[in-house]
Image (cartoon, one colour):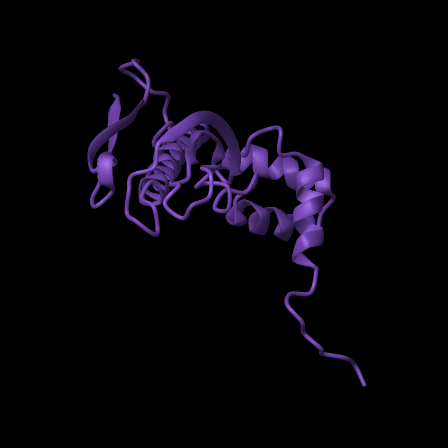
Length: 181
């Protein structure tokens, strides 16, 4: 049995509509007794494919909104493209990231701006949060191994990434002034 997985985006600009994500399942007719449902590997592949589609659509929306000059409304030209890799909870996503030429309507010479620069981090907040939880009670290597095994986190996000996420989670936020008396 095979299952065709598609997603449908609504109000997603150029990505609105139905998109085929992947086909899950093998070509075999018979399964072993007790072998029911999708496997862990199939689930990780499915989640990674869905994540890839979702992040790519978010990035396309952000880029499209940034293509209009804030002052005069003119459409900004694309100077060039680069690729950015983002570690997420369900695997890494490689995104095309444009650099736009700013408008010269304010009298300044055009400069290149990246609309995704402020939005994209190397690691998603969800991955940092989920890495910090096991990283705070287990060794960083054990926590990384668990994330790789169960969620499909990219292997390049290893114990160093878990350590960094755990230490960042323990930092005080803002300007709290709670002191023990």
